[in-house]
Length: 277
Image (cartoon, rainbow, N blue to C red; front, top):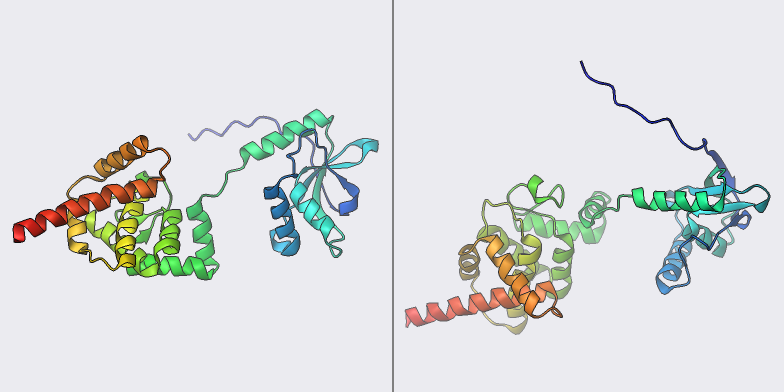
C-alpha cells in the first residue's frame, strides 16, 4: 500500500490579487537590498527602458494597516515602473503580516527558496526562442558533432555531450566561430565515446591553443593534438591544469589550460620532427 505524504498545516493567510498604482507602494530600507549601486541602477534603467509585461511577475506586497503598502519582493520592477509615465498599475499579491520583522523573514525565505537558472537552462530557452546568438552557438555544436547535455551534472550526461556553454561562448568571442568548431571537434575526437566530465576545464585550453595558432598563422595538426589529448585521462589533464592554477592563482583557468595543452602539443610536435629527421 502506498503511503500518503504527510503535510504540515498551511501557514500564513491567503493573499489577495490586486492591481496597485506604483505611487501607492513603499519600500522598507531596513531589510530591502540597497539599490544605490551601479548594478541595481543599470538593471532598473534596463527594465524601464525595455518594459515588457510578459516579463513582469507579480510583486509581493504587505499591507501594514494605516502605514500603507510595502513591497516585500519586486522593488526593482517598482522603481522601473515609477520612471515611466505609461505604467499606471502593477499586478500584486497582497498579504497582511504582523510586523516588519515578519515581512523581512518572508523576504529572506522568498530569496532562499529561489532556484537560480543555470547557464545551460537559459541557453536552451534562448535556442527554443530562436535567439540568433544562441542558435549560432548551437549550430557550432552540431557542426562539431557535439550534443548539448541535459544538465550540468555529469552523472546524467551522455558521451560526447557538453554543458560548458559559458566557455564555448567565450571561445566564440575570443577566437571566432571557425576556431570554436575546430576545438569542439578536437575535444570530441580526443575523448571519443567518453562522458566529457572535464570539458569545462579542458576545452578552454584546446580553444586557446587552436585559436592562438590560427591568429598567428602558425600551423597546428589536429590529428597530433587529438593524439596528445587522448594520451592521458581527462582527470589527469584537469589535475595538471589546476596544479598550474595553484602555482599562478592570478591566472584564469582557460589561460592555465592553454599553457598546459599548448606546451604538451609543442613537445609532441618537436619530438615528431626529430624522429622524422
